[in-house]
Length: 384
Image (cartoon, rainbow, N blue to C red; front, side):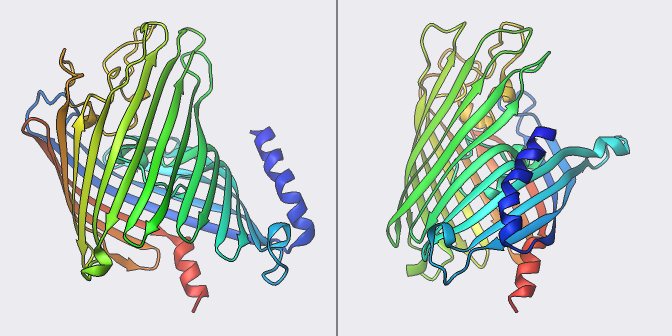
């Protein structure tokens, strides 16, 4: 931790010479109710459960602006620097946690926002920072909703580049340091897109998850997913907020290097359609293909089940769990209806219902979520 703090201060030192340093602060708050009810007790994908909790993340630090808008771009262009420290405070309602158990994770990061041309911007984030810094379009097979709520931060680096009609990001999330009972784990992830026409976008998302040794258990598992896609949006032509279709191809690379002689290469197609008007959306996600999590129920050399230690996405993408036929294509469908208004600057509300189908009705959930971001409210007030 001392070494990380020293690196951040060293990165900020040149800025302190060239710009006036300002005290900065931010607070985000999330409350989520997610009642998940399966059709039958023997549901092989996920158990019935209720997520109902709150998360508060206060941050304090310093910010500065260097360069000038009229000084050209490149090294002399306008740049915003931010060095922040905070803590995630979270509680599941009804749990018997002590006060000390509420402090979940340290937040500590440096962020650079750099204008490199009139239409191009670069961002660097380093440290422990919110997942919301990532703006890539990732399928639900990459990250589940529950993961985003219970693990809201990346630990590592994120680079992103945005132009008027394109976006690209590359990041590293270091999830575990090798130790006693703890495996070395890290994820390299990337996403990008380009708008070919006003209604047509070509994009991709991908990650490579490296699940390696602990001091007690040897063995390495590779888990990689690649998802190119085409997205069509005719919303502007029919006076709707969105009327889109996303057609993607999912291919995974899975290998337990000790227990598998050859890698498994499951694959499938994903078709997502969404219609939105007056902040009310109807979205349907249809996947047809092979089990994208074939090692989910397997165990490592220490006898521990891989499960959600190896896979962070929606478990319904297993399509045929615990079946000899799991490599034969099957369908999974997720239908979602929700209302998501922006109540005020920085304040968001979501009311929705999710319905899941695998060879018939599998279950449904009801969701209520509230999110507040002080940063957005401050920017709105300052722009008046």
